[in-house]
Length: 447
Image 1 (cartoon, helix red, strand yellow):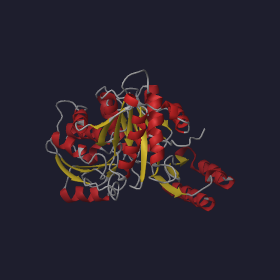
Image 2 (image 1 turned 120 degrees about the horizontal axis):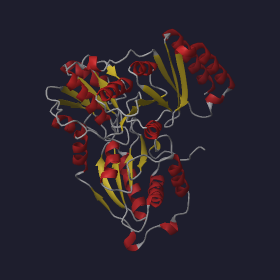
Image 3 (image 1 turned 180 degrees about the vertical axis):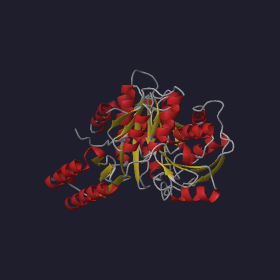
Image 4 (image 1 turned 45 degrees about the vertical axis):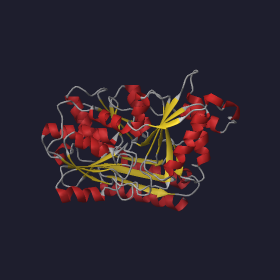
């Protein structure tokens, strides 16, 4: 059943737009606090955020909501999403909150919620919170001495920095590596350079001067142009681009070529397999991951378990079927030995460890397979359900038949914005381009 507030990754929308307002954030705080209160003790919530100007507004509204139902609030300030998940567990909080719209432009914002164990909420729990949001909560508010209080936690960044460093073997350091890191003017603008420097790397940082408006603005994992130029200019060994909340990563090799999440998963998965660390006999990825990754893993005697798009579905499959490496082509890499959500920095550290151990250039380490030709196009629409149009459905069926077993076609609506994504891949690049363009044109006509 369609949900009113939650999408595929929490609540997200234009700050002060029709969906995401201070009033909603207040009610989310009250509803979530009530949903997570268990027993008669001092409950606590940790709240982190990225660097968007609207984060102040939403942070204060959430704080009012949580304290109104008797929860104490620990404010972490700008902090990567995976750090919030980790600190939720580490600080024995009853719930964790990240205020971010990830890779979206600064005008948007969002609210992501974590359980006490650091995992994102199930669909059922989100539905329960939605029901509470729309309920009359007046009689359930705390009064007198039961009203919660809030305070800032100054040591939160240090705790995450040490945690990230401990994900590496003790004998690994990055001395001799020149690393350019693009923090997307986002949540990791302090933590990522600090971790890399403390591990011995020579660190050059860009995208580390947030002003509330420049998050993801021509920087970060969704716009790596500046990083590519800086890597080539400085003859760096590697470039690392994070997104606004640092739960995804894009790698740039020493030649300035992009390395996507599929190659990163291949590197980490096979490296862990060789060391006997890989669990489950393979990795988990979404339907968007390249067919080349699947063929490469099969050649290594490993499996590729596919899920719907969304890191939450990757994680569900990992937990349900016993895998410890998974992720998305976009750069959400989940390493469940260390994290409960995607962590761009930790994934980059694991890849750098392989680079250091093998003593080879990043371009060699990260070229595990030749990708099958793949084309992804996005169509933005304002209203209606274009994919339910009869002519569009017929064209999609015809395209799937033309690609046959040598290719794939994935068409889906984004869960975070009004966009339809059309992805085709196959051994015949010309055919892939033709069918994708035909479908995009058809959808455009009815949208």
